[in-house]
Image 1 (tube, one colour):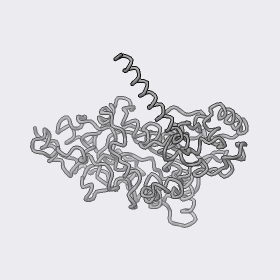
Image 2: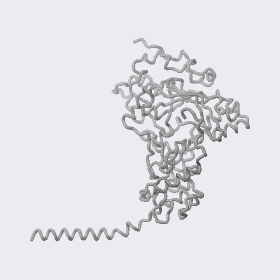
Image 3: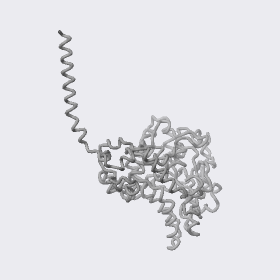
Image 4: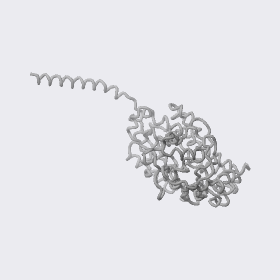
Length: 371
Length: 77
């Protein structure tokens, strides 16, 4: 993504005045400040850069009240799964917990979005700056909004930027993110969710691929045999990015930073940690997330004493879907092939207990099929 | 004779169209577009690349020694 020069970030397209809805409002109605003051320094007193965060009810919500009503429950805004996950792993002792929580606020929570940071400007964490001269974008653009944040994994998978891995087939059909991820999902539906995989109006492959179980469909038998046993990605995704060892801290100038031990490409099938009626599959693709015992060591030692309560290989839906993949070429490309499965040797020894529920025991790896 | 009548009717149509267009003028100029009003300094400045360049350079000079993001960040977020 091309960075914007400082003046480009705040340049307003004069045609904004012709926006029959937003152009009718005075700048100060949303942003504050004094439009009558010719001195830019004093005119900016009290200016609010993003009037839609943390509370959009007086700005966007004044008209879009139906959307603003659910705003605080949108995962893009509240990032509540971060808190839930860190809280589960955190040391309960109050003095330590508070330090972990402060670190989370300084590092993890900054990656939130807002109405403005999708429809008007690039997200702050991606450097900010107006998308199209402050012209409101009904559909946020992919490169400067969606993958500005979801860049390391989703963008590289979807656009085929990982060396040797082709782009997602949906990308080749020119699908934008919003083709599957509708506005209602992005805006939240007013319900509190534990993770993005629980969101009820999230996309499902079957929304479009309804005919895969039709007797006349070419692979109907394969789909029936594997139904509720493996997720779609187990057969149809390619190797994807995994990260490890995230540590956060502040440098000598007090600026926050993070460091990861590195990233690696891999493809691992594991046991479904979120098995439920909506996701009944026993096997799913798992991605290594960079959580580490010492992630918050800069702030407090032993901050995550309950680290083992959650796996560090998490349910993943890689965005590099292909009809044909190495593992679905033949039955035995997968059956009897332990390299595809997350087994004990794939997991860092100090993370074995944490991943007990997702590691595939040898006896559960499907046996080689006699042809 | 026929050609003369044609020219006449064309002229009449142009006159009617012009009168109609003139009658619409007050409507379009009366549209309230707040940011475009002369006294709105936010709009005047933020729509001028020259003005913004001048100010952002001024800001850059005054914040020259303030680091933006930590150079210690390493890895993929």
